[in-house]
Length: 103
Image 1 (cartoon, one colour):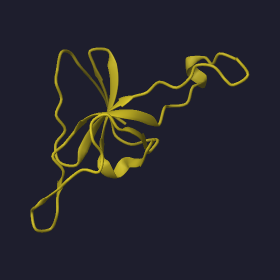
Image 2 (cartoon, one colour):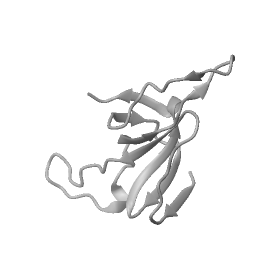
Image 3 (tube, helix red, strand yellow):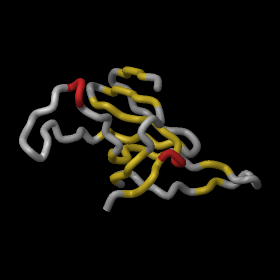
């Protein structure tokens, strides 16, 4: 997975891509033990920050995305490209890498 850092940039995804703000996982276990950075698993939950215009079908028409800005989603573990914009971590991925909308 590639990583990229941008300063003061605004990012608009293309096609069926979405920009997801990564939600940090809890730093301690249910038993109250704090986990070091090396023991933490990568988060698979995030909030949609931007949505592309949608993919094109066989006829060339746009297919609207199933997610909208603000949706909380669960995505594939190794999907997308990690991007850091002004110190905030995001993930740029295709809509097919989104597994579910978290209610």
